[in-house]
Length: 183
Image (cartoon, rainbow, N blue to C red; front, side, top):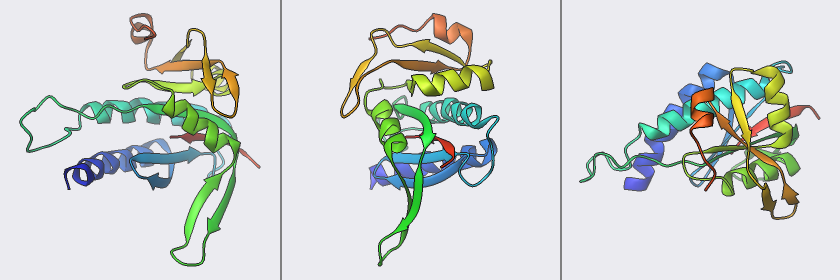
């Protein structure tokens, strides 16, 4: 019950942020929130910027979401990892019973890998996402992840961390249509 309560409080915040940033919530898979841009609305000039700003605000929302509102530790907040990637996706309604709209394809899988190999409290994106982001949102800063990462099914990839401003970047250390995917 406590986990579902915490997820409900967090996902309500993310739903509001998605609406603010013009990001489409696609699915919730366990404790993962799947969202995309440039899916239903034509957003070719700023889809990566929208998703990155959403991710930055989502991370801030998590840092202000208590794990347990009645718990003994009032400082225990949600620690999220966020993964972003952009590229082509396929969308479909699947199943016969309990129909479900979902996104499929390598772009979704890569975004998921960006999340699973990220660090708690960090936003990691693919090199393709970082390149588009540098053109669409110069106010969002990226920094190459030192050494890159080995990604299941993809091999070695160069990835980047996303920061909301230059000071957070310099103080941090490592330890069909094109859509952008938040995982």
